[in-house]
Amino acid sequence: MSRAATAPRVATIGVYGFTVDAFLAALREADVRLILDVRQRRGVRGTEYAWANARRLQATLAGAGIDYWHRRDLAPTTELRQLQYREDARLGVGKRSRRELAPEYRARYTQEILDRVDLAPIVEAMPHDARTALVCVERDPEACHRSLIAARLARECGISVLHLRPSPRGPSMRT
Image (cartoon, rainbow, N blue to C red):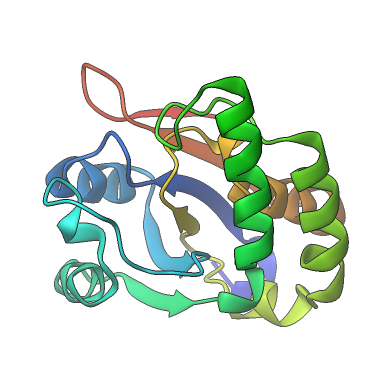
C-alpha cells in the first residue's frame, strides 16, 4: 500500500498500570512503530516504573523495533503541571488516581502549548503503514494532556485515535 493511500493512526498510552512486558505487548498488538514521548521530565519515580525512564525505555523500544522521538514542545510546562497538582490536592486525588484534567489546565495547555505547535511536520513524519503512540505516564488518557493532543490530531488531521489502557486481564484497546 502506498504512503499516500493510508492515513496515519495514533494511539495513546500511559505507563501507570503496565509492566514493561504488558506495555510492549499493547504496543505490538496496536501495531505501534513510533513513540512520541510527550513528557517534560522523562523519568518516573520508584522501581515499579523504572523501565519507563527515558534511556531504559528507548533501549527497550529499540530492541522491539519501535522508533522513539521526544517531543518536549508538546509537554506541559512546570507551571501547568503545578496547576494540575494543586487541583488534584483540592480534590484529594493523586497523580496515579486522577480521572480527568482540571478545566483550567485543559484551557491553558491548549492555549499555551498545543495552539503554538505546528502539528503538520509531526503528522508528516508519522508512519502511514503503522500506528504512532503518544506516551506519558498517567493511566487514563482523560487524566493526561496526551488526550488533548490526540483529540486535536483527530479533529484537524482526520487521524483515528486508539487509547491503550491496562486492565486486570492485560492491556485493552479502547477508542
